[in-house]
Image (cartoon, rainbow, N blue to C red):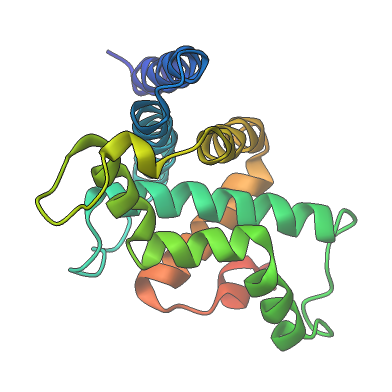
Length: 194
């Protein structure tokens, strides 16, 4: 099977998971809907990671990053790449860019907050809590979730699927992803070669 066909099948699975999550929302089954929606986001992240790996091997991630968090982080970085494109629709002069201010703006953005939540493992733990009733939980699994939370994940998925269409977003996302995994300067990754 070709690489392109494989990626298409994975994206199709992401769409199926999101459609199933919407059906569960209609039935007010928010915890299960949340978990399926997030699994769909992870499928989009898998497409990103696989396509980046096919272009040029990725460095080994930090030990604490599970595959789930890696996929979630790939999607968050795709959204940061799309934010970069919206912020600088005509491009940026990297020689005069105030990278500290730009970093602050990105960190304060919804996309930046999402990346922090993912990197800290909160989103993945939330997914686990949606699926399992742990002994230390004082309420039923379903009581911990609301339609608003599922809608938030589905909006992330929708924005990520739209952002996938832009080659710039994917390149910027990889640069941001490598910075979060390797600690490499994002500006070094995005700055055009001279």
